[in-house]
Length: 594
Image (cartoon, rainbow, N blue to C red; front, top):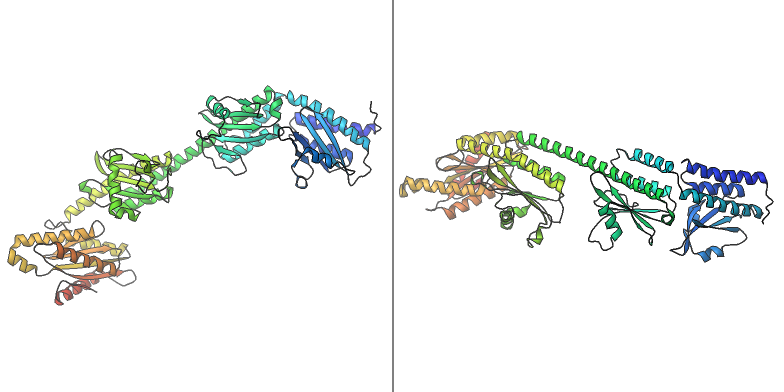
């Protein structure tokens, strides 16, 4: 029998503080009971330098669980190292209770006369304390768990930040059960800080344990006694979202109340994640509907085909800046080249690629969506592909292509948004093209198919008010009277048609070609320089000389304007006309600019 000659009052105060710590824990006043416990010990011994290690049987070493200053102490000590530091300035107290195999190192360098009897009191009372506390922990009162569940539910109610949810769940579990590690396996990507152990489930991952798979599929807790690990399903009202993996020695002695508590915590986690996900989904839906509404209003306020297309492309770019876009009109009455944001579609290879989409859209009748397109088309430069036919009143207008050179760049929500925006644009595009056809029909020269002089003049006047630069090119068919005299007016008309077709070949849908009068023709090009206009003129003259039969040549006069100069529409006509006159005077078949 050990007789300790220590003040009964000091010992009584020490024991009272110990069990007040236990009482606070039970009443949920002090969730982190270990620091409080050893603060009490330090106060009793008049020593603030106390280190506590817990034995890990699996790792055959002690690991740090408490120190007054963690930065000064290594986190891992092998057991023989602990024995080696037992010197005059350190006292080691060994605790052998089943659930807490501890070694307490008391450093008393500032108090060499520390009473050994006090040390013995600490050893006896801490053993008694931990034995009693272990029994209480084993039969934990449900009110403690219920209070924590209620507090956790309230804190996560309405939370829209998944990182906060994961962090809070881990904090509650680790503060309730000592020595626990928490990790997550989830079914989808979340934006999570690096310090949280959250991984995405991959069913083809060989490292994914059968317990995790069973927990997720069955929605029930799984237990691996060898690994001292619990697996909890993260379940919501609409499905399972993953698994919480909990590891620690305390799992071995955990009673049914503790496991029930953890199961309920996992449910709270599932419901919170589901709420956050649904909130984010709803917000995305609202954003998408707002975007679609704004885009539709923008479409309806624009009657220019290219402006509508550019609006559509800019909207797509806001969701995927590295994507490539192209629109290919298909119906003959909506003739026009593909409109894209990549030079690839100006090449024959790119145009052929768009036409080949016919095979995947079943004659442009169905939407095509693929994340690994090269598996089917190894030569394709695109991996992620969306192709959406544009239909209006059962008529196929064209097809919209959206592509990315990396695989799986578009999720389902992006795909549905792009599809919806395209369908909303169809009516505006169809109306615009029909309006342009009607306008053209009313302003087209019936013989040549070119625009009339009146339409050209109106276009130039309008653009000089709204644009920043442009160029006017006038052409005259050289010696056209001789053609009429030699071959007759019927052949003369055919030559005029051939020249007009050559000009249309040059302008395509970018510029305006018009019949100026008689054998005089014109091209007006918006937003180009004088040098570019001269190049267009020379190209037109070259095509005419090579393709007409009987062969004719053109004389051309070119002028340009910009906001930097004080120009008027009349000055543009006059300068182009003078340049054309000079070209005729200098021997014809020439390009002169003013």
